[in-house]
Length: 144
Image (tube, rainbow, N blue to C red):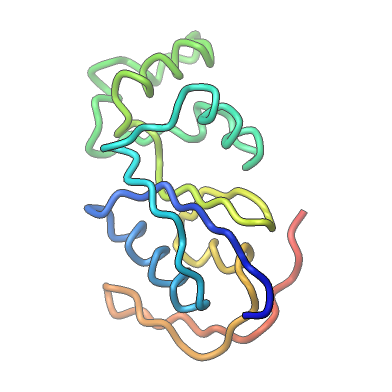
């Protein structure tokens, strides 16, 4: 790769989607900065900034499965962003993953192939952990 291409992934190694996303980044020839966000949670202000840059609301970034979402009654539409951020701060597992930051933008990469729009063009194939083949066919359309 001719120019440096900085990538940060907010990663949970226990998550298959996160592991597949990390694999796709590495297949692009990029060694990302891996932040295991359960061990080193991002500061509240950074979470807010990342979500804004990704075009997500705090509610859209909440993870329900395998989290205290239901016990904390976070589905209540009356809860404010600040209240939801309080919950994420107290329980980082509530932040959906993986969030990826590159010079091309920020995205919640679910499914893992969503990361391809943020990476340099690549070709070939990538086989996800579940055996699904992702065909990498060179340049992808620019996203706004």
